[in-house]
Structure formats: structure tokens, C-alpha cells
Length: 171
View 1 (tube, rainbow, N blue to C red):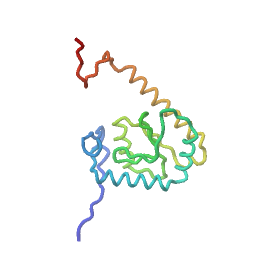
View 2: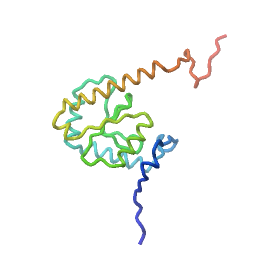
View 3: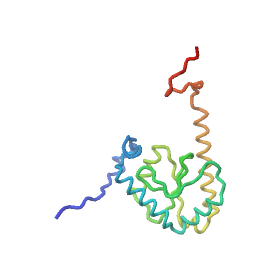
View 4: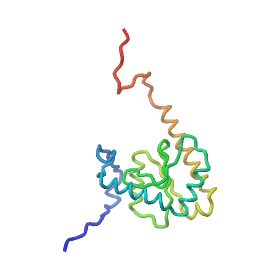
């Protein structure tokens, strides 16, 4: 009889301060194409069969005008499936089910290391108090927008010269 392989988590103390490195493999992450395909299939299945909290939040997002900051449902980011994500803002919303695991905490660290902020909202709060949940989301959106503006303002200007393109000479 063969031994089954199981996922073994390392201690958080071993992982402290380490972030995943981005590779050329697996659309930028260190993930096999087979694993990514399985994640996309799972995300597609979650979009087809949403929970009540997902349905309620998606309906509310459809009513709101976020401008250019749209939220997509069940998005694969790295090796995680986030419930809603806005790529231009670098913001993801995770509808928390009652049992949060150590794996989710580590996933959040790896996403934060590449600049994605995660807002966790309990499913019960969404169903009980939609307005309060939307206030939390709007506050996170505003904070991320301000952060991005600050980074853009503080970035050194190159005077129109792009380092990735050679300069043309006009003689």
C-alpha cells in the first residue's frame, strides 16, 4: 500500500518575513499549469454556484458605480481564489466563512507581499448589515486609491524617457 501525500504546513516562525518569489512559470507565480487550470475550474464552479452572501454582495456591486474600479467575482490570484477583486486598485475582498485556517493567513501574507490588500468580511455581516459592509469596502477602496496616488506622485520623473525603449534621434 502506498502512503498518501498530505499538505504539511511549516511553522509560521520559519516563514516569518519571507515572501513568494515571482517566477516565469505559472503566469508569474511558482505554480504549475496543471494546478492553475484546476484553480480556474474551481473558480468557475464557485461563480456558477455562489453562496447567499456572494449573491447579495454581487447584486449590490452591480448597483454601485465604481467608475474604472470594477470588481470581478471569484478571481484566481496566485494560488488563491478571491471572492471579489479589483486589479487596478490591488484590492481583494474575501467573504469569511466561520472557519479561517492557518493556510488562509499564509496566503494573505503572500498576496500582501506582491501588493494586494485583502479585506475580510464575515458572511453573516453581509447578510445582516449590507450598508455596514459596503462602508468597510468603500473605506478600503478610498485608502488604496490614495496610496496609489501618493506612490505615483512620489515616483521619480524620468522626463518622458522610458528606460525600456531606445531614444529616437531626430536629425
